[in-house]
Image 1: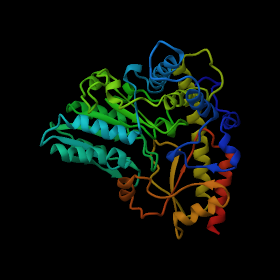
Image 2: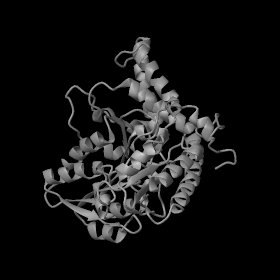
Image 3: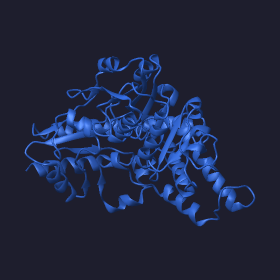
Length: 406
């Protein structure tokens, strides 16, 4: 990172009209606040001339540019060709769609490998697809003490009939960033494909599909300042080999064969704007290509979030032994799972909410790691940092936690 590639949090916060509410948001893992630039892009697309894609008149041209701009933005964000960027209703919907397309080539006796670190959106689609195809599900275990995957159990799960390994890029519950490249290399050694749920990774790190070694990857723009939809990419040869359910007249060209119905042009414009905002988190470098600006900005964001995470962890530790921070892996996002002995998450969240601090509790659809950690619903709260999180926000959270402890 160059010396001037830093994140000025007050500059970033000025982009978010919602922060005028005074709420300190620690709910980023469930969805970030939306910057003005994204809202304006969505509104401008909807209210300007707009028709079905084409090239004859301005309204058609604007629709086509929304689509192509979205694909270029996704390419820069994920380090992939624009021709491999797919829009979907959500990451969950895309996972279901692709699980069915992939399972069409599975047979009884084939195997699918899942991990106990996953959000259920990266479990149920594969379990159901495996059941439909007669395939067997095998598991990679989670070490509850460290929050990290037990890679010995990965080796035990892999075999000559393994068709797919599905792994998170980062846990939405505890932030763990597993060694995806190592998982990919081991999976490829037995001829399996690798699917990465990058929903919680993309908001916090620069992602490159090839560096991860993955075959397919999915993410959610609303987790990184954008609108509510999903984005998928994959290796071109993998995408070309899939035949999804689709309408007969619809295009059979990748990526459009995977996109059902007329695309929501306003969402596409919003995703493009969100990627531009991420690229602008670190001021300067305006003449650089967007992928380079993303690299600068995501490095600055990681530095900002790491500093705040350490400050938050130290502050929570100072509150005493009743406050327990769970499964802090060596490599993780700025996402903490915390329980307070003698208090439920509802009580703690309500106490914080009374001070306009939002820190929700529960399992957050991560039922497998929740159980593996030995937690009881609904005891923990989750604390997630975002580009707009400030030192003052952390101070307010810690003060609210101290008050809740009595």
